[in-house]
Image: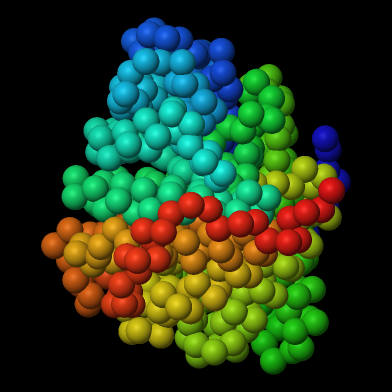
Amino acid sequence: MSYLLNSSEILQTIQMINQQHLDVRTITMGISLLDCTDTDMDACCRKIYDKICRCAGNLVKTGCDIENEFGIPIVNKRISVTPIALVAASCAAADYSPIARALDRAAKETGVNFIGGFSALAQKGFTDSDLRLIRSLPEALSSTDLVCASVNVGSTRAGINMDAVALMGKIIKETSERGYMGCAKLVVFANAVEDNPFMAGAFHGVGEPETVINVGVSGPGVVAHALRECRGQSFDVVAETIKRTAFKITRMGELVAQEASRRLGVPFGVVDLSLAPTPAVGDSVAEILEIMGLERCGGHGTTAALALLNDAVKKGGVMASSHVGGLSGAFIPVSEDAGMIASAREGTLCIDKLEAMTCVCSVGLDMIAVPGDTDADTISAVIADEAAIGMVNSKTTAVRIIPVKGKSVGESVDFGGLLGSAPIMPLHRGSAAEFIARGGRIPAPLHSLRN
C-alpha cells in the first residue's frame, strides 16, 4: 500500500510527533497456540514457549527498525495468544499457572512489553478448563511480570453468566491480597473482541489467522491541539475537526501496520483507532472534553462530549483504513489520564459518572483503584452493572478494578510507567450479597434475536 503525501502533511505529522504526543501505542502480534495442546503440562508449556519465540523472535527488532527509519514512536511491542483455557483443556493438571510462567519466559525472551491471552470465555457457562484457568489467576498473575489475563462473562447473544461474575469478584479479591499489580493485569469483559491489540485484554481469537499483526494507534494530544483551533465554534465544526484528525492518525497507523506485516511476513489484521491516554500532560482524553467547554471532566455534559468524540474518531478512522477493528474509540482509564486523575482526586469524577461514560466510549471501568477492604460481592456487582451496559448496547465493556490492600479513600497508589497513578475511589456501601448469591444467567436481551 502506498500513500501520496504532500509537504504540508509531512510537516503536520512531524509536528504531531514532536509536540503533540502522537505515537503508535502498540504493535501486537497475535499467535495461535491451538497446535500446542498436550495432555502433559510440561510438554504443553514447552510447545507454547517454543512457538512464541519462533513466531515473535523478530517482533521487537522490527518495531524498533520501523520506529528509527520512519521517525514514528512505537511505544509498545506486545503478543496476544489463543485463550489459554482452550489450549490447556486437554491437560490433566488443575493449576494452569505453569503455563502463565511459560508465557512470561517467552515474553521476556522476545523482549515484548506484555503478553495477553491467559484468558477464558465463559459468557454462557464454564468448561472444566475455564474453571481451572480462573482459579489459577491469583497465582498466575502474582508469579509473573508480563502476563495479562481476561475473562469474558457476558455477551449480547448469551446474556450474563452471573456465576462467572460472582466467581470473578472472589478471584479479584484474592489476587489483590497478593499484590495490587496482579489486578492491574486482569480484565473482566462483556462482548470481548478477538482482535484487540491493547492490554490487559488482548487475546488471539479462534477466528483469527495462524499469526497476525494488529496495531493500536493513539493521539489524544493531537486531537486536543486541533480542537484548540476551533474554540467557540459549533459542534458540527468540532465533529468535523476530530474526524479529519482521526483520519491522519489512522493513516500513520496503517502505514506502520503494513510495513510491520511485510517485514515479518505476517498478515496485517486491523488498526485499532482507540485514543489511549497517558499520564503525560497534554496526552489526555479528559483534556479534550474540557476543551469542548466543560470546566472539569466528570461534570454534567461529559457523557455527551465523550459520545461526540468517540463517534467522530471512528468516522474519521474508517475513511483511512479498510481494516479497522479492535475496540476503536476513546479509552477512559482513570490512572492513565492526567485530567481524569485530577478530576477523580477532587471528587468531580466518581464511579457513577464513569459508568455513564462507558455507555458511549470504547470499553468500560478501567484502572479503578478502590479501598482494599472492598468485599467480593461489591466487586461482582460492579462487574454485573458494566456487563449489563455491554449486553444491552451490543458493545464491548470491561472492568479493571483494583482493590489496594491497606489503602482507603483519599489515598493514592502508584502503578508506574504508562499505568500511572490513581486516587482510591469510593464505592457505594449498600450490600449486593443477596443479589450476587442468586447465580444463574441473566437472559440475553430481545434484540439479540437477529437471525
